[in-house]
Length: 167
Image (cartoon, rainbow, N blue to C red):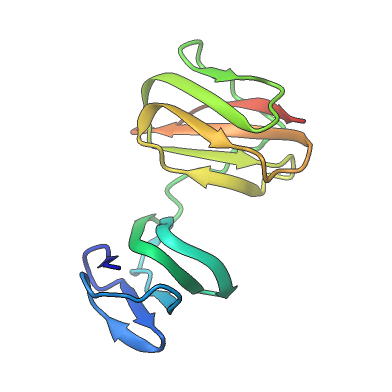
């Protein structure tokens, strides 16, 4: 199984305690440790992975298939927090359904959504993703029943939010 890493030196990967490089062969069942060094003035924006499962401990994963890591950073303090109790109306060009939702929330927009966040009513992030598309599904099955706020972000930052009821 191959290892695909983001460019740069901000991400260090160890397999069974030994450093590995891009393209290295990694055996299924190996323990993979991810160490991320955040550059000065930046904060972690995206940390996504494929081919890793069963989190063993903090920053440690078990290899299940070809491994791909996606890591990106943003300027510190770049995004303003959104208060979930003061929901900004979602533009009419965005559809979110079904609402209430049991499992998959379908989102369709006329502009590319670079990032979404699902917040609880205390403003804590429960889910997030980087679909980089106009149509996608958010898997809500892991959330407890209740009311949440969906925030969509485009190239110019947040462009709307709406309340979502989870059954």
